[in-house]
Figure (cartoon, rainbow, N blue to C red):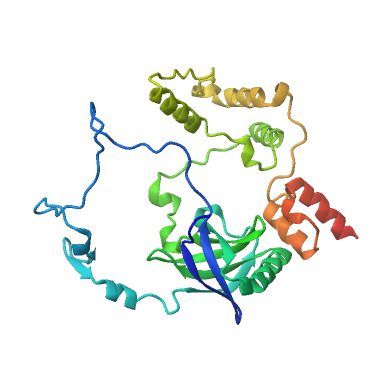
Amino acid sequence: MVNPVWVGTLMFGEVPIGVRLYSARERRGPVLHQFERGTADRIRYVRVNERTGEEVPAEKIVRGARTAVEDEYVVLEPEELEEILPHGSRTMRLDGFVSEGSVGPLWYASTYYMAPRDPADAQPYQLLYAALDRTRRAGTATVVLRDRESPVLIEPTRGVLSASTLWWPDEVRAPDDVMPPVPYPALGKEELALAAELVDSLSVDWDPARYEDSYGHRLTELVRAKARGGTITHRPGGEDRPRRTEGSSRDGALQEALRRSLPHGRAPGPRPPARGEGRRTKRELLRRASELDVPGRSKMNREELEEAVARAGGR
């Protein structure tokens, strides 16, 4: 059992729910440290005064921030930081409910499991979980966690409630702010049909167990081997080296590469309707399935949702 990272109250309307937040993720595998070559001496970082070069003890360190004037800083005392914390910094108040899946992955920062704080909190906790699960909604609030206020999304996850901190709107960069403009060359119907066929042929249900941390496993093997006085030799498999398509034959080469990618080199079948041509997205189908109260909708893939919505709409 791990220690909670936050303990407080979640307000569901006027219903208080005492909760604790626990980290939902942890890094695995060997941790690499730094050493001076030829010795067993660890390299460690110390806090030093950049003017004198002398180490500063923790009790003499205060926090500060740069002002609008270059090279000018102000010191912020602990009691000053405490004073400006939002009122009720140990409280999350649900202020709205959004549709399941309406918040994209770009906005997620960290996710925590949420548990009832005390036995008396179990009933309202389960009530909120059941209400969110039934309505396919997620609750929105704000939380002060680790000296930072963040938007937070409360969702039913793996049989418990989860709380995911989100980035603020001005913290999410626009593509044009960080990368050159993406060109938009014309797409041929043949290439688009082949690409759609390839996507369909490789469509699977999400199963994280399909993925393996091969580098982490090899790093663990290397550490164990060197601890025994040996080492390992990694011989990468015979992956095909990517081939670029150049010149006037690029379109033909692209089509050929797509055909080679299809299972058994089969020719593309009928192209499904593209977005905007009657083919609804999974999010749209989930919303419609929620309106029709389709059972088991959260576990369906896009095709299953499409069939279930068609059946439910015709009854």
